[in-house]
Image (cartoon, rainbow, N blue to C red; front, top):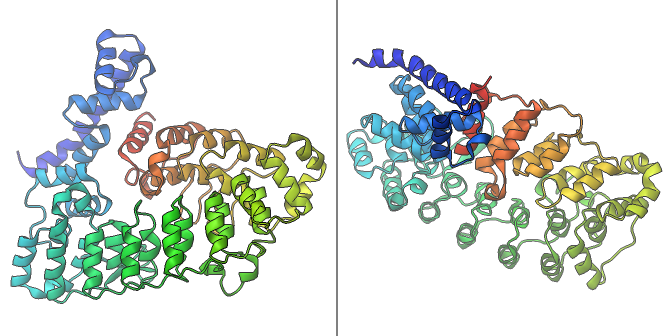
Length: 521
C-alpha cells in the first residue's frame, strides 16, 4: 500500500473507531452483558458508571493502544507529511511525551535522518558526530527558532530514557566544539520572536531538569545569570539545582528566586538561600524601585504562601522586618487576614503582634470562622472590602490556590468578595487559580456563582485551558485532582479550544477526558 493511500484511509479509520465507541456506549446503557464486561476489562471501573471517555478507552485498548489519545495521535500522525511528523517528534521530545515519541520513531526509523536538531534532542552522539564531520556549520544552523544546542538542552529525552542522560553531555561537547553558542537563546513565545528569550542553560535546568547537563554547561562557561535558571531551579522538587547555581556564583537577589523557594514548603532550601546571601528584606523584583514601600519583604511573601511558624522564625532570625508593610498590612496583620494562624502565633511569640485595623479585623473574623464577629461587620462589608488595596480585593484568589483553603474561601465569598473578580497582574479569577492547582473542591464551590467562564487570563487561557496546562506544568500537579477539575469545568460549559493547545498540553488522563468531550458532541 502506498503512503498516499494510507493517508487517505486514516480519517475513515478514525471515524470507524469513533462509531464503535458510540455503539459501545449505547450497549452499556442498554445493559448488554458483553459490553459491560468490555468496559470493566478495559477500565477497571464499575460498568454502570461508564462515561463516553471509558468507551473510547475500551475501543483504543482493544485496538492495541494504551489510551484513546494514543490511538488518535497515531492515526493523525500517519496523515502528516515527513516535515509534519518531524515537528510532532520535536514537540514530543520537548514536552517529554514518551509514548508519542516512541510511536513516531517506531513507525519511521528514518524520520530524524539529516535533522541535526532532532539527533541532538535524541542524544544520538554518533549521528551528531557524523553530521558535524561532514558539515561543521550545521552546529549553528537553526530549525525554526531553535539551533541544535537548544534542541538538546530543551529535550526531556533523559526523563523518558534515563540511561541516556550522559549522552547529552557528549552531544553538547560536539556542538560547542563545532561553534555552537553555549549561551544561545530562543523566544519564550515563538509568536513573538523579538520578545523575552530563554537560554540553553535554562533549557537544561529549568525546563528539562537535567542537572548533570546544566552542570557541564556551567563548567564550560555558560552564563549563570540568565534571570531564569536560578528561579526555576527551585521547582525541581530537590535542591541540587540551586546548589549548582550557588556553586557557580549565580546572582540571587533581584531574580525573585528566593520568593519562588518560599512558594514551597522547603525550609532547608530557604535556609540555604539565606546562607548564600538572600536579602530577607528584599521585595519582589517588579516592585523594587517604584513601590517598595507597599510590597513588604520575604516574610510577607512566606505568610501569603501559607508557610508556617518555622519559616517566620527563620526569616526573623535573618533580619526580616515584621513591621514593614505589604499593601498597608504588617506581617502579623497579613497572617491574620490570610488565616495563617501558625505564622501569626509565631509572630506573637516573638513580640511582633500588631493592632489590627477595622478592615483587618473584619477579614480575620471571616477567615477564622468567627461568625459572630464577622456578622457584626456585614452591614459595612462592601465598604470595608473597597477600602482595601485593589490587589487585596483579590485575597480570595490567593486562598483559592491553597490546598485545604476551602473553608476560608467560602468565608471570604460569604463576606462579600466577588468570585468573578480578576487580579491586576495576570487577570485570573479565583476559578482560574483553583483550576491551575487542580483543586476540584474549590472549583466545584466557585462554579455555584455566576461568572464569565470564557474570561481569558493574560496567557490567553480560560479556566479549562488553565487546568489542562496545570496538569503537566504546575510544580505541585501530583497533588491535584485534574481529572475531576476538568470534568467539572466542561460540565459547567467551559469551551474546549484545540487551537489553543487544549489537546496537546495536558496529562494523558486529562487529554482523554477532553477528547471524549469533543467526541461526544
